[in-house]
Length: 272
Length: 308
Image 1: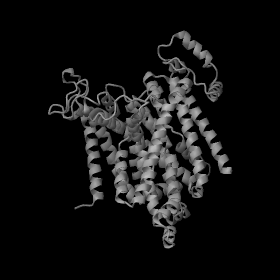
Image 2: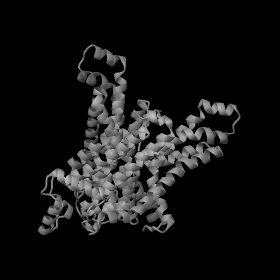
Image 3: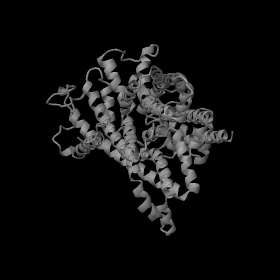
């Protein structure tokens, strides 16, 4: 019997893998058209015909969920990658250069720690209009600070260790040291940070879609589907249950992953 | 004292950054600011008048100064849809949001501090763990999912609470407050529990036990002062969460506070209102969190050095 820890990891990987597969191959799967309206089939409960029921326009909920996963995962992945790249760049720069760069980052961290920049994501996206690029850039731009803070601290800690000092004494250029010595040692930290960043980004992206800042209709998004389901919460439970379940399950898997990597670095962080 | 001045300077800098970002959002992003603020159906005369009044033909820095001055006077212009000054709308709706946040903070305090202390005084340990698991489970779902699911279960299926929010009824407030409190509770509770256990295993509690203090006295006078401050600091740091949380909770439960107002502003593309709301939200949260942080540092000397 494998450990519970391993089981959790497998569960998370399996679910996320299945989700990624479904999302990437959605157009080739034998699914109903997510956009085809059939008012005769409106609001039918789950059956062999519609596994997760149909919505107020008779569209298949399973098919819509799978197609919605495409845009949701695209934005989540894009913003997470941007987020981590910015965090690595600024975090390492601050820790390695010190001086002005470090002070600037410290001020940025302080600022992001107390100012709720989320409201500006709402403002900017409302002004420039919703698109995958706008979402990725704005979400990525406000989320990197938490990760940068951790990377800065870790890089500074590594820099004081003997093997880095030896490399410096040998006169290796900073870039090479960072790439060959610091980065490999940050691997589990980076994995943890990526998983946490993905959680934050997904929560934010779905939340924005929920309050109406989703990719233009009729293309489905998870948050948009949940918001539509809210109108029928007393009559059609499946319109609430399946999007809510999908969002929560994905977040749970990411959380399990994050915890797993975190245990590997022997640190637990308490964040909001 | 010097630390206080630094915090005050930081607060001023933060407010300046907030207002500047709001300005840049409206005037520096692609698009015609006059159309943005007045909407797509504005007449050419109205657009021309707005351009003149907002000084759109003037250089950017002059407009920036004018924007700063108007914001300092709390003049955010007029709402596009409601045809009323933005500041009046915000003042009118703010009490509901403040009430919701206060109720949520109160339930966080009850569930993550009062109940664990009571459970500890009663001597049950497993109870606290189960309780912690429950909140951790609830916190996996983001607030909007949790709010929709809770509403569907308690109002749609069980019919325990009315589906329409009624501000005068006390029980209408229970669900929104609990939903909003779920995530902070999970985190603060875990942290507090952890800190409490750590304190109970520390040498100074051993000393107190050796001197024959009662368990109750050990808990109240030795353990709590140490365990409380860290958890309270975590709560103060999480204030921003309450704001984003109220957005969703108000929309789902139909509470007509600032979150509901924001939702309407987004739907109607009411940019003037949205800018005002963003500034008010950002500045008030920043002010509160900076003040709380300073207060906590004052209370707990260890935090003064810990923050590096």
